[in-house]
Length: 274
Ligand code: C2E
Ligand code: CA
Ligand code: CA
Ligand code: CA
Image (cartoon, rainbow, N blue to C red; front, side, top):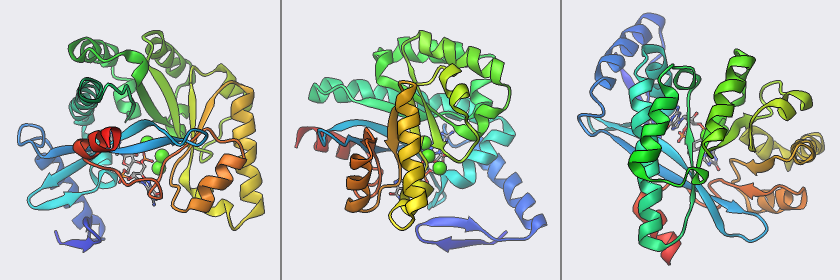
């Protein structure tokens, strides 16, 4: 199948059959990505809007495959469908925890590291065991680890989800709801869920400057979150004015290209020491 280059990422050509074939090919190749050492993790800084200090980083996986950089938007769904996300996700989690510990050892700064977790990983019966072994193997302080779970997938089986999230929190690990505002979380639901942080989806951040309605919506999300003792972080901040507006609206933290693009670990080390 033909792969077309858009930006630095490869986007696969359209057409159903072609897509199926491509997915099969990718699944087979994805099986070897860890042993071939093709995965890299980049870290995007998150900043406290009050102190302007780096408060954490989000781990974002990259797949360097046959001379190309394949977007996680392309291969994560394939890893989820094939079940490979269990192994790949565990690898990512371990790398991120190890990195958090080295930053602490190298710089004396204890940075929160947020790791994206798919629902497929969470509901896997082995997940808590995996988490426990990674926590003990890496020696990370669990309070410095955050798991990001997208709002839409929280909708699946709520009672099962609550139990898993509670077990994670019992270990000291925090939970953030990713892409917040794109699903249907009610205030009551938010109050009942064992979560610590809401990540306002970047679609709201990019539209709030131009739309008063969207600005009010963001304000409401922040107030609603604070009402039930959650911390708010906005993603996709690309303009200084957006950061200022979020700060005025009471948002706690922000992340986005305006502050920094995702970076290799050594650049984060430099940012911490420089
Ligand atoms: P996400 O979790 O919503 O991650 C944020 C995405 O927005 C990242 O794209 C990030 O590079 C990008 N981004 C950050 N700041 C800005 C900005 O100011 N403007 C714009 N336009 N974009 C910004 P990325 O790295 O391509 O990741 C895409 C998605 O792939 C992630 O969305 C997440 O759903 C998934 N993903 C990435 N890494 C992992 C992982 O380790 N595990 C899992 N399960 N999913 C992952
Ligand atoms: Ca995320
Ligand atoms: Ca997000
Ligand atoms: Ca997103």
